[in-house]
Image (cartoon, rainbow, N blue to C red; front, top):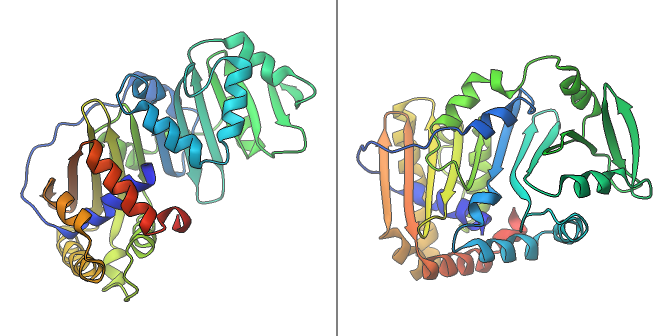
Length: 321
């Protein structure tokens, strides 16, 4: 389902709109605390608030989509079966950060069954363990190069770079909290409780557009796509599904040119596919433009989501991403 949201965020770039004040939720105390464990040079950050998602009507659909199409689904099921803590219960939030040099870091927050979670990693048949500065670092036997460390009973830090993990435990260097530019991107995200993803690398935009548009024609003015500086997508599931996407360009001129270029590309896409689903969903869109930013919002009901998932499947988006 999240891939469908990304697809739709790209599609709605075809339109321009008027200015409007947007209500933005603040960064939570929990999120601020986790930022201290993430690399300062993070380029892509994803957040999922499982505890809040479980209280929505779309929770079961999210579970089916996430676990049904994810190779890690079985491992997550096994972990929850053994510890009683997983995405269905016990895990509150998950953060995944990536850097340009391949440093991948994940933070998982638990709310229950702390002893069972600790015992899972303490099993010598499953993990190798070594001590460092009062903490244990675990490596799964013969299956993964990732390093697992329980910072405390409720915070699990997973890092593929052991040196980075050791620097966190030593309290050395700067953290994501010091990345003022990226923090400002997150501060502008509209929905922060359920799901959001952000990047300060605008080159991801061109990749998304080229992969998600079914037209095979060359996209116009790639230098305009190169003017995109950062992107965020967020979704709120409290009342239906509300999606917001913000794309920031180098300046207002490039933002205007970008919307015109994408509008042309999507017009070709629609004409080629004669897609009635897109036409019906376009009616629900609200577009907000301000200076160098373009904000796209849409509220979806159950039928809209089913249509969007069908559209994504027909276009083989899951294979493309």
